[in-house]
Image 1 (cartoon, rainbow, N blue to C red):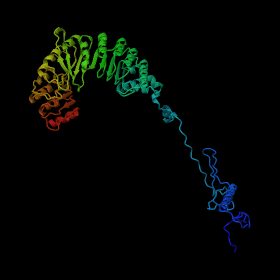
Image 2: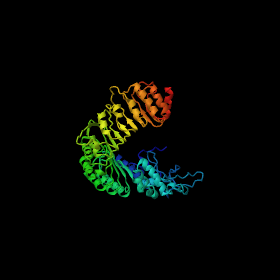
Image 3: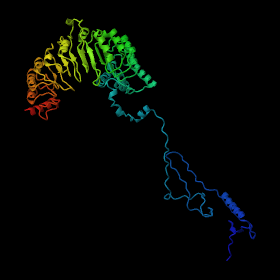
Image 4: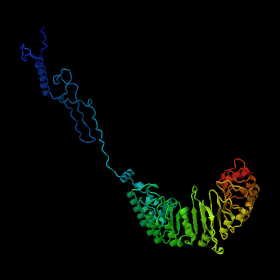
Amino acid sequence: MEEFDYNSSVQPGGSRVDSASGASGSGKTTPRKERLKSNVAVKAKKAKKTPPFHFQQPTFNGPGEDIVFFGIDDSTDSDDVPWSEDSEIVSKAKSPKKKKSVSQEKPPLKRKPVKKKPPVVSPDQEKEREKPPVHAAESEDRWGQHLPEEVLVYIFQMVAAEDGAVPFLCRVGRVCRLWNAAASTPILWRKVTVGYCWYQPAKKLFAKTRDRIKETVAWLTENRFSQLRDFTLCHWAKNVDFTLESISKFCPHLHSLHLSYCKGLTASGMHSLGLHSRSLQTINLQHSQFQIDAVVQYLEEHGNQIRQMLFTRSSRHDKLLSAISRGCCPNLELLDINNSVASKDTDMCVCFKMLQHSCPKLKIFRMMNIQITEKVNRKIDESECGFPLLDEFCVTNAAHSYMTDEVLLDTLFGSTKLRVLDLRGAKRITAGGLAELPSQELECLFWGVYFTNPYGIKDNLHLLIEKWGHTLRQLDITNQPFTEADLEGSLRLLSQLSDANTLVSLNLTGTKVTAKALRPVVERLTGLNYLNLTSCRNLPRGMKKIYRSQGEIRELLVKLH
């Protein structure tokens, strides 16, 4: 057997080549570096002859068509694939394969659709796309587009009276042309309340936002407010003067103006009202900040057309009451001055004689949470004073009131038509002083004492029942310290004098009423719908609560027997 020489290599054709000489049959030796170079050259030559195989990407004819997948066949011949020293296969494409049978063919693979970026769509276009397509059958159900315009106006009028014209009419006007025409009817815009639609109260506004608000206000006043009667502006800290100027110029029928929790009313806005709003009769500035001198000047120039004046009391606002007492508003019918419960500055000096002389047509007088100090003016003739048309007199206070019987009689000595008397907190008033009032048909008497501990003992409640028992509809004597006997006799007299359906509300909270005193009232007065018996210590447990319906009061009657 022939011995194998490790210094020789075999050529592809099968002949042996001596590695030392590079030729067949030579016995010369060469250095190791030259041997390695010759091996690298042979490998490089083979690599040039057989280029590496590259996977061919399939061609796509279009979405939805079948795609043919090309791969490497595992059954390759050894003659066609060269082997390296580490026995790795160098990839090479084989000649085209034979066509397989139908059963052996692999199902074609489908290409996944390529995700494309969605186009930029505006919010209005997106809403339109979300709407389902309208079919012929559904188009017949569009009853809102086929109603007569008069019917739509009537429907809109009911909703606007309940929820307000803004923003309801602004929104329904964008539905279709028919609804827009109905929502544009001037009669629907007679009473409008505008709140902080664009921003929250006390929030800083940018210039663009302010301009947008002005444009909206100007468009509404020019195109919708031609028949505006009552206008209310709530929680506006900016653009108050601009709004009043626009309203006064384009709303000649403006009758009532109400600014609630607003700031920034200056002489510019009041001057525009005086120049254009000749029909303005009601000004409500409660809980708003404004320039006192501007309002006083307006009342001095145009106060004869004002019928109702409402504002919140402060030390600076005393000038308004002084201007009214001087006779700036001779036709005033309602004067309402309120104050915050938490306010510490509650004292206010009032000259009722001057008010009686300056406002003889006054019908409603209200002062809430204000400590009234009587101011005497002896220059006024008492024969010409009095409130002959006064219908409601209210001087309520959450704590206590300094009103006395003498001051009350001097104020109401000429008020024969008085129907509502609210003296809550006036614990210095007595039943005898109330009985001397000239009114004979009082319907509502609120004489409760709240947030204070009543002192002493009161009596003669029967004097009030004898005078007004046949006309009283509401009676409130909360926490009044009447005796048990006085309460029992007065309630029995009330059940005899009052008709069955006259008295509707009775508040006996914190009194000494007993079950025996309640029985005739509950039995006979069937029109009673509200009965407050909370904190009545002389009643048995289970009865001391509020009864808010005739059915609940009937259940109480069963317990009383």
